[in-house]
Image (cartoon, rainbow, N blue to C red):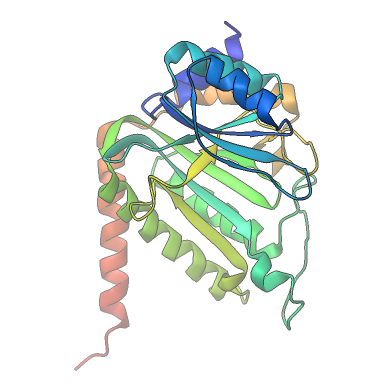
Length: 277
């Protein structure tokens, strides 16, 4: 087995592997026949008009087949996206993108793409939101893995043990609110940041997230790791990924304390907003 496949399997342990979304430039009945010949079932396929990337939701995947899909993933033959468990997960992620529904209009106050780090096509709002989120997670002793994703970043936290999804969601909601408030306090528009949370308790059986080691669909750039304000090259990203896996998994008692801290800050902030009598 490719050592990179082993790293990915270890990092994302706990996520269901009997289903996945495969993003690839390949398409057609021959591809579907190859998958079905392995016993994999196709739940749906989505063919993009531009031909940039086609998406297939696959189910009834056995471990050996997942190993094959992950070998395609690290070989850049297709991106594997995994779904989250419906009750509890040992991993969570924030997905920060520029909100093109707003940014593409060119309305007043649009800061445009600034690409502060490498060639990431992010805006000033996304950059500030990402820096703020990383700083808050580190203050809580929850070191994140930050991965460039075209128009923004995926920010992962790996936990020692699975935590119930409602607790994960409350933790992320509190942090997300604080991050967007910081964007506003800096005179920028938080509506220009598209912030998605994984697992999302409302749609967790519908949405998946791309794993580290992928290649961006449009610009064909490897999804590099962000360390501080630097985007590492591909080799450096894999080395950082391995180091993060070995030394930055968040202990259960540390995460529990972080949850109490963000909930306490939220409650304190709510009380301070109430008018005095």
